[in-house]
Image 1 (cartoon, rainbow, N blue to C red):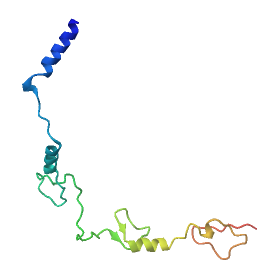
Image 2 (cartoon, helix red, strand yellow):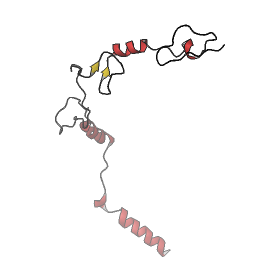
Image 3 (cartoon, rainbow, N blue to C red):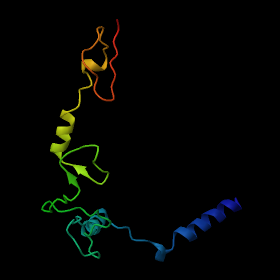
Image 4 (cartoon, rainbow, N blue to C red):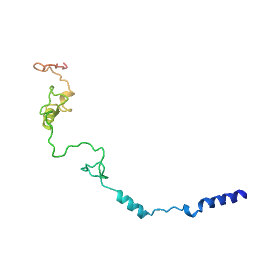
Length: 128
């Protein structure tokens, strides 16, 4: 019994003090504070102290920027280097010179002897 009285007494002392009451913010008040802080980020903002400044944005050239073409090549060949990059026309031309994957020459061997001389670096194979 003594324990029960002590527990109730301690709870009353801890929970009852008039000066210990806290004010609880209303949902409307919290929404006003959040709305005042909410800012849309601005890509063109240059002031790093502004709330709408975007940190760590990549250096992206503007759409009006002139293309750097010193390493651009119009032809893809064995002489092309790693520093060069091809134009779309160069890629299209290079691909047009290649045989398609479903080309019949890739999965057949002729049964009669081919005529002529094979191209340099190639051999003729056929079955008799």
